Length: 443
Ligand code: PMP
Image 1: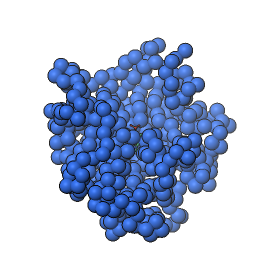
Image 2: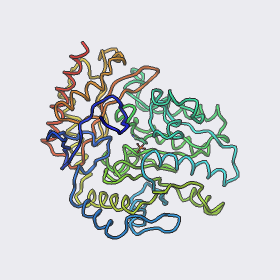
Image 3: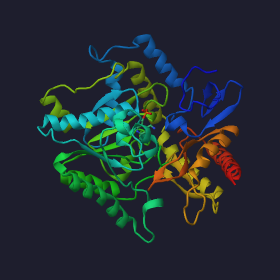
Image 4: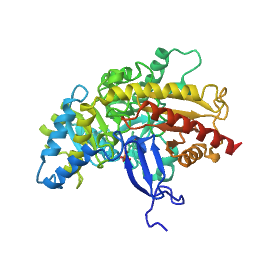
């Protein structure tokens, strides 16, 4: 019996004992293609020799120094690198140990910014229904995933949720992308007016929605409109790129493709590629200045922030992505993955939508393709697809998202950036078999 409390207490899990390239191996010698990078984490795959070498070098030099006393060469170099490549205007970095920590820190930076400016009445955060921002309490409160929030509701700070930009479910028949972008962004304006802009801290969104909806990108111009609304009302615009950032969508930051820069941005997962736990907040000069010239102290902190081992891992991962030109492979293999999925599931009665950007793709399942009716949530179709995929040596990330109170089923694909054409084809082949088997099991 295991003594570890895993996410799924009942499930018997295979024991991972090794990994190489895009595969993980269990104790029985079975290989699994990691077609989701865990949870969009393993951007370089497993056992990359150059990352391991960088980690060994760092360990031989300095494993840990508390940030209350020291900075470190590794953390400084990583911060310089992140700012060099950051969206316009983001020129400071706060290094933490993961995505939820990054979101918590970003929310507190946003709140403290307004306190420093003499606007302590600002207390509202607006986010979106179909979203996930982490499992710590403020991050959970910000996310709009009802299923995850439900047991903890009495403990959550009050947040406000508007509809996401989710074309497959929420764009009206015959509505142009332009009209839909205006309508979806208009929901933010209405919410700000309802709450009173002078009381609002920030609007928070995932650039491409990940763990709740399965790689849902916004329609063209939606985020530009959001940026303009935030500016018009003087509230901060925060993008959560913990999952979709750091090259996953084919550009280093997903928001580059939308032509916007936020005031705060969170990154994690692909930053360190799973070689060490790491996350970061990128923040604007204005937020930094307000705090620096105000109290001079960000009232926050964690024991392992700026950890030299984590910083060295992230720097190595980012160097390799640049050195090997891997973003071009993300774009090319992402297009191939989308095309192959569309071919495999063309006219499939239970595949409603295939979408995403780069190597960040979602497949949404429906009981009926025409009506978009979801499967009975009790059937847990997404978990069945995961199980059938694992049986066939394939890892895909399962999700049940809620929209308008309806629980749907999706899987997320986020293979390592080093994936080859043949491997993309194998992923689609195994996924096709897994989906057919899962659907057959609920008939
Ligand atoms: N934000 C987003 C968009 C995420 O996808 C996640 C993790 N799935 C988080 C925050 C939380 O990150 P972590 O699990 O590292 O705390």
